Image 1 (cartoon, rainbow, N blue to C red):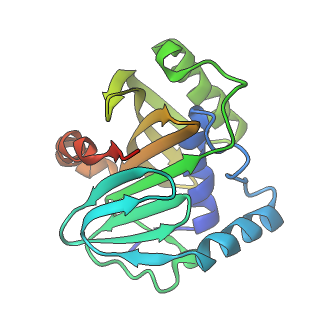
Image 2 (cartoon, one colour; image 1 turned 60 degrees about the vertical axis):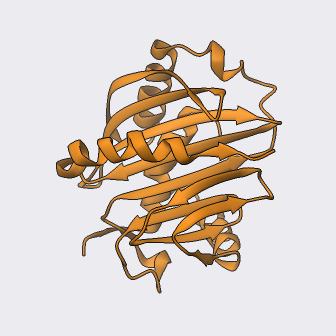
Length: 211
């Protein structure tokens, strides 16, 4: 199975997460390996496997369905799910090249930016392109707009990324409630996008705030 180095995965995924200004302090680049190691060590200490079914995170007040046949791990502020049964015994060695879901929660407060319901597509597109250029990642943003998650204003972005020869098709949702911002990121190899996007449309409906 092909794998992207985990440090590079966090950089690539971090580009998407940073679009929403969600985890800028939590997503170090390859230029700061010590910070990367500290973050990974902290996450790994919190890693717990999650069974298929309704995943409930009471600490951060949300729930999401883990599909049958998927493997999922919780790491505190992060939830990661992978289709099938990829080998996660050495997760730091690489990120499986399979369909996946990633949920990140930020509770540091977003007072320095305007609310999500005031964003527009051009601002989001520019944010994506500028951040990707800084990290030498090729990105194509081809769709973005407003939606709702669990009755709250949300924003979504569809894009294709290429970095270090690794290609990703992805959709990001960003929403906020009760002083926390939640980012839900779906990723897959580009040749699987058509089928996976139909799955995403149904699966994102299982996300709910629970407080």
